[in-house]
Image (cartoon, rainbow, N blue to C red; front, side, top):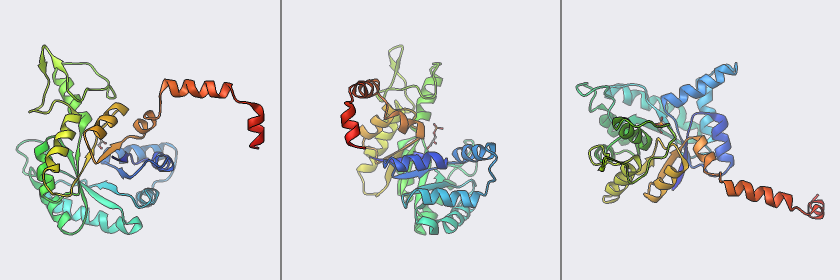
Length: 273
Ligand code: G3P
């Protein structure tokens, strides 16, 4: 499984690449805002074009998703092309993130414009990461429209299932891939029992056909979910920096380090100076 970092924070991205575990970057408007707010809070002057250029350079030629902020098909296509033309020459690694359905509510006329933008941009050779996927059917349609990547949001499905069941939880709490029962009934959203189940169903369905699309398990909040995304056969998991860092932690690793350190023979260290 490839690992992308789900962040627009240059320091985090640099660190993840320095660890040698990063195969790409995903950003979205919320992550971009967080990174920009951090810069501004530090008193740094923001040049967004220069910032994105640095981000693309840092990713060393691996894919970076930049998201459109428009809603209509024509505006998303226009903005996607502009983003691609403006930045792809930096490191030839830009893909454009387009919501599968940019509507805010059920009767919004932009209901189908996401697919149209996915199709038009893909036909022009611009790789598209189709985002905000919450059903396997949305993933199937995005793949048919030509998306290079589809991004099912696992954690947000888990949030919804727990919220609807009136459960209290923290954002990073583990939610079992096999789902949770309440009063002997398995919680589900139209046949999806967990975020990881959503990822697995997307992988299974798209794997039956030859779309050449890759599934990016997104909205993952803890190491165990990253493990389960890998077990589900997700091509890619996009992980916040904190999750990548937490994947390195184990009490016995810490304890082992302490014990080994206690036993170090001074001559051994001296020899290596
Ligand atoms: O990649 C999507 C991701 O940024 C959303 O994550 O934790 O806000 O649901 P989250």
